Amino acid sequence: MSKTLNTRYFSKPSDLRRIAPARLLQFLTLGTSFFESKGYALPENADELDHDVIGTILAEPEGMSEEFQSALFQVSELSKPDQELFDLMVRIVEGKEWAEEAHQDITNADLALMVFLNEPQLIEEVHAQDYITKPKSFQYFLAEDDADHTFHKPSEETLARLTAALNAGFVKKRRGENAKVTIRDGNGPTCFLVRHGEQFARQAAIQHGESTSVFFRPEMHDLLIYNAMSGELRMTTKAKWQQALYLETFGDLLFGNKDFFGNSPRFNFDPLRELGAKALSHAEFPEIEWIALREIQLHRPGGSRGQWEIRKADNLFESLDAVDETLPDGEIKKVTFRIKLKNSPRPRLLKIGSDNKEEVKNDQDRALFDNWLKARGFIAEENHEDE
Image (tube, rainbow, N blue to C red; front, side):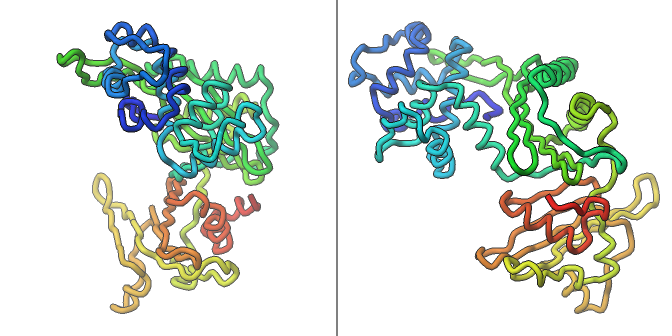
């Protein structure tokens, strides 16, 4: 979801003209009073819509009702010409009787409006699935060694208590009481999509030729994924207070222990020093063509904050061998690998750190890369269970 007040698709007349007029008019009637306040009356005949005027008005959202603003933002996010997003919407509406109107010439925006006008609750499902599949950087937190990793899907009552606890934390940090938790529980890890508000923001705007500002609370999402096999909870948020809030509330209300998740290290960098370039072997992974160490960050004690050193090359082990050197001394804090897959024209990056952070540009590669990390001993011994 957008972090700033942005009507995107619906403020561009050229994009509005790509939407079936009747469907567009039906949607715009949600903001009838808003358009009237701007001096424009929506016509009864969809063919008489003035797309230029409508786009200009929607570009200045001052005075828009919260209901219409929310609808506009939700549909706008799904109207962008994104092939994967379009395919996702098609899958979600498959079998719906009203979806028979979705002919071969339907656009992203038409389909998004069709979903909203027929089953608006499905918009949240589309957003959830779309967000979950986007590439992300995750921070990992591991259950204590002696903890029971078993996960049971929470009841409605437990989910309500979890939401209330999150809201209390967000309110304390002046983020408002807007939390909503969506759970996706399939055959693999369980996904939790947490919607919440951010601190209020002002954005410059122009109204009737005059400068003004819009005051609003941005909407944000955090993704948390729990793997019951390994007892790992990974999350996208970087804010320490939010991480602490999630760890305490999820541990308490889902596992009965506020300290269920500890600070055990997920990654082990010893293979790099013990085996050198041999630590990058991948013979049992036919999808991988080659792997190279691209970058390593090290820390040595000394002074008030110690010393940091970064070594970087397309193939660091090869570069060190050329000058008869080995990896420098120091505590390894972060490592970046270049991994060339046989079905990909360019190598991909995999970054792991001592702070339990893992970054993969293409999220569909995560399972393969994690399996390789486990096979080579880069993931701590106690977390070797298969996902």
